[in-house]
Amino acid sequence: MSRWAATQWQEQPRLFLEEECGEQVRRERTLGIKKIGILGATGVVGHAAFQTILSRTNDPILLGGRNLEKLSELFTGTDGRLECQQVDVCNEEELHDFCGRVDLVINCAGPSKQIVDKVAVACLKHAVHYVDVSGDEHLYQQLLMRKQEIEEKGLLFIISAGVYPGLSEVFPAYVAENDLDEIDLLEVFFAGQGGFSLNAAYDIVCSIEEDTGWGMSYFKQGEVKKIDGPFHRNYSLPHPAGKRDTYPVVTKEFGLMTKQHKIESAYFYNSYQSNAILNQFVMIKALQQYKTEEQKRASAKLLLEQFETKKPGVKDFTMFHLHATGKRDGKKVRVFSTLLYPGDWNRISGIIAATVAHLIAEDQNRKTGCFFVAEGVSATGLIDALREQQVELMHSIMEMK
Image (cartoon, rainbow, N blue to C red; front, side, top):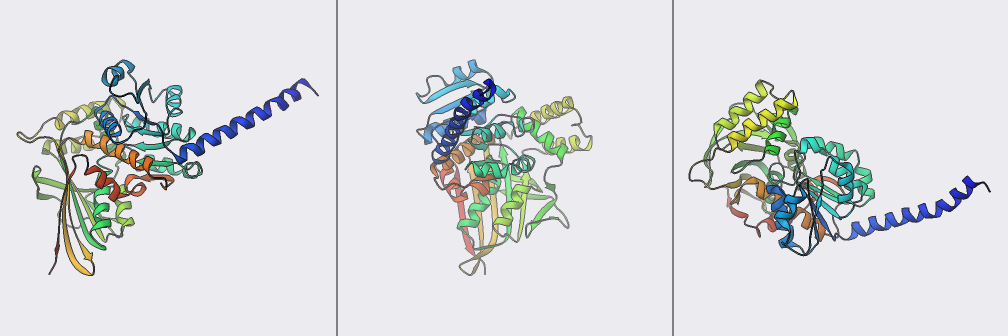
């Protein structure tokens, strides 16, 4: 036997055992989630996710961030379950080392338009469940190309597990599941006031460049339709939002939710805490102030300045308000419902992502594959869990004559 052949014969059993061990680890991870990792832990979103996991589970937590000293200052001594690790998501070696040490990753790092699928791909390689507080239809399409591998490894990947998109689809799905057998008309309004991050503003500028979503449109039987007639509405929302200018815009995530629940007509209206924000959006789009990286960052800073302007006397809040008409037990009814969180959208985004992770960890019959949050977890289960965490739900149903 030649020296080369002898080496091959000796190496093959070892390689086979490594593959078997890898498969065993993957099987164990699909059955039980024992350790949760949070990336971007030093930001407001990541910190809220950490606090939620800490209070709702007994699982060990691995926190990742670019600045290990800052991580240690913020979190050391918080809990014996906690461990910190330096991770730059753009550093492949650091990222893979982090993902290889946990069973589920909550990605709160940004900007998501620069990270794209880096974290998701690392999670897939190490057979780790994945929850992304951001993400949009572009990330969704990229991950769908890996759908077969995700399912074969028994994994669940959830994206858009934040406020908008995210809660913007989960809330109407909750109403569809619990209050109406059929929905003829759905109108959802979003309002809020609070802090904003530069990463979030950067992602918005990139979305303007990509022309994500459809403005001045609605969904009719799951298909995008242009609104025929006036589209701008001045609408009085419940306190603390009050009277606001609202503008219709729909996304792929919202459309999938309407199709899943067979909603005849569905509208989504965004509102802004000041008209200056809307004007800034218009200027960025009209002047195409996103052609270079320098322009994107400059436009993001301009948006950030506008979001920092707050209505005097109004504390931070995040609100979804909806009304729907349809049938319940054969009778024509109208539903009015308001979901209110007494804090800004950054904190509630972290709470949502962590609550989704907790639901995944607790569900032994979880789905496998890649989904937007309203498809991947129970809307009822998520809203019920959020109501235990300062989120208020005000609800009324009346019969229509």
